[in-house]
Length: 78
Image: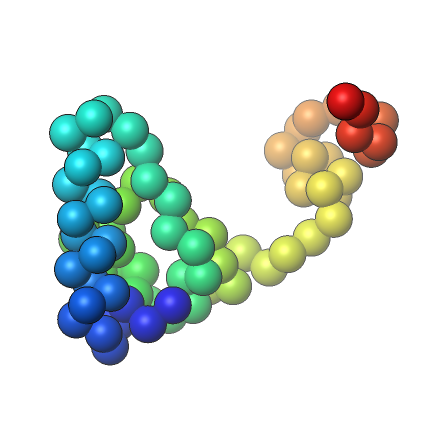
């Protein structure tokens, strides 16, 4: 959450991003709330982001509907 202002957080994210890149894995940054953080995450090679800056929370069915996914049973089964 404090990547834009905390050098330790920046270093940790940079290290994780580099390991993921070498392993050909995608990374997801959570709690992206500001443009400065988003720019930094892009520069560090983070693949995806989520947070209030990128989109507001919404019910699953609404999100699926906006993606054109057919309505499905909302109950999760084991």
